[in-house]
Structures are given as C-alpha cells and as structure tokens.
Amino acid sequence: QVWLWDANSILVYQVAPMSDMSLPAHQIAKFANERGMGEMVRIILTQLREGTGKNLPDPSAARLKTWAAGSLLIDSPLEEPQWERVSDAMRRPLGRGIGLYYGNSEMSSNQEMHGWVEGALDVLEKNVEEMQLAA
Image (tube, rainbow, N blue to C red; front, side, top):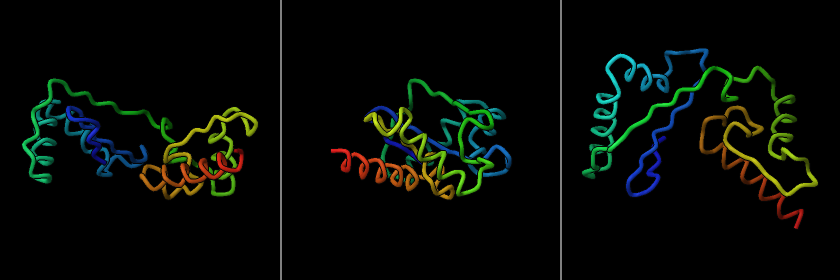
C-alpha cells in the first residue's frame, strides 16, 4: 500500500506473516538490508514516479520499520470462532459501556481481511453501527 500522507510525506506499508519470508511484503526490508536505504528509496521513488507520472521530489529523510513476529495479528493461530470473540473485545478495549472504539485491519473478525484496507473498513463499519446504536 502506498499512502500519500500529505504533500511532503509518502508511507509505503506492507504486511505479511513472518512465517514466510519469501512473500513480496518482506522484499523491501530484504532489499534495504542488502543494498542500503538509499538504494531502496531510489528504487521505490523510481517506481512511484513511473506509476503516477509525477515528478516526486527526493525525500530529506527515510525510515524503515520492521516488526517482530507476533506484532501484527495477521498470522494469528486462532480459528474463526475464537478470533471473532477476540476481535469483538479488542474493538471495545474498555468494554461496551465506554464510548471508546479501536480498529485496524487486524481487528477484523474476518481473518482473510487482515493487512488489507477492506479489513479496516470492515471494523469501521461495525464500530460506526455500534456508535449509532449507542446514540
């Protein structure tokens, strides 16, 4: 996923289970480790420029963050019925009596949507529905 955060910031976000390091989402970190951050940024910007047709400026800084296995719930060992209960509890971290809602793709009750924008939208829809019922 590529997020044009604002006029001066681009976020490249990839997620994949740590159990399979051959997946495409791991390739940016592997490339940066083998060839360096500067080359990684150059390649990504070249691809973004070609894909968008825009003359994007070189960044003044770049950062790469990898997460240890288990940091994301994308490769959770839980099955669907168990995961639905976890998702429901985590979307309402302080309980149903408190108007605090949490959501991201990994909170989707559908594990196939973890790591995808559709997963975040799934959680958003459930949270908005509960907010409307509470109003």
